[in-house]
Length: 279
Image (cartoon, rainbow, N blue to C red; front, top):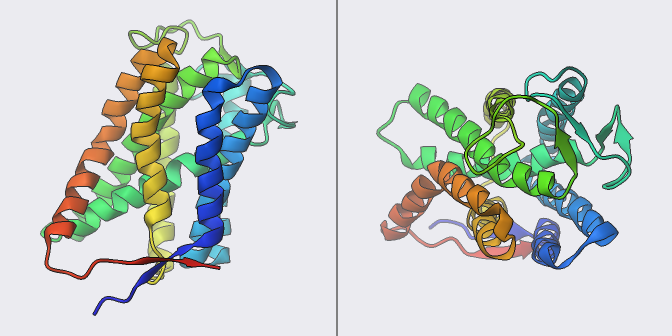
C-alpha cells in the first residue's frame, strides 16, 4: 500500500498568500502595486524554498537557491551592464526594494519561483515515460524545464514592462503584439534557463526526494501560473492579451504533457495519494 503523502504547512501558507497577492495585483496602483509585486515574488520563492527544504532537506534547498537565484543574479548584473545575453535594459530603482549593482534584490528570487514549479512538473512527465531510456528522460526534463521557464517569462516580461519595473533600450524588434521587448530577451532566457535546468538535473540526482512529502504545492503553483496568468492577462489586464496567448502556448509545452501524465496516473489501478499538512 502506498503511504499517505503530506503537504508542508509552511510552504502551503506561503503559496496561498502569494496567490492572494496575485489576485489583488490588478486592483492596485502606485506604491501599493509595487509592494504587491515584491510580495508576490518573495512569497512564491518562499513557498518553493520551504517545499524543497521539507522534500529534500535544508542543505539541498540552499543549494537550489544558489543554482537559481545565484545564476539569476549573475545573469542580471551582467545583462544590465553589458546587454548580454538579454539585450540592453535597466531596472527601475527604489520601487520593489533595495538593489545590488542596480538589480533589485528580489529579482533573482523570481528565477527560483519560476523554475522550481516548472522543473517539478517536468519531473512528473518524465517519470511517467517508463519506456524511454534514462538519457532521453534527462534530455527531455532539461528541455521541458528550459522551454517552460521561457514560457513563464512571456507572461512576466510584458507585465513588468507595462508597469515600468524595467525598461528596454535594445534596438532589436520583438514578438508580434509585444512591442518594446526585443527577441534577444527570449534567447537570453533560453540560455540562462538551460544552465539552471542542467544544474537542477545534477542537483536533483544528488539527493533523493522524500516520498512522504507531496508535490502538490509546486505543481499547483505551476498550474496556477500557466492557466491563471493566461486568464489574468486576457481578462483583467486586457492590454496584455498577446502575452496571454504566448505564455499559454509556451508553458503549455510542459502543461499539456503534465496533465496527460496526471490523467494516466489517475486512470491506473493504484491507490490515491492523500495530502496531509505537515507542521
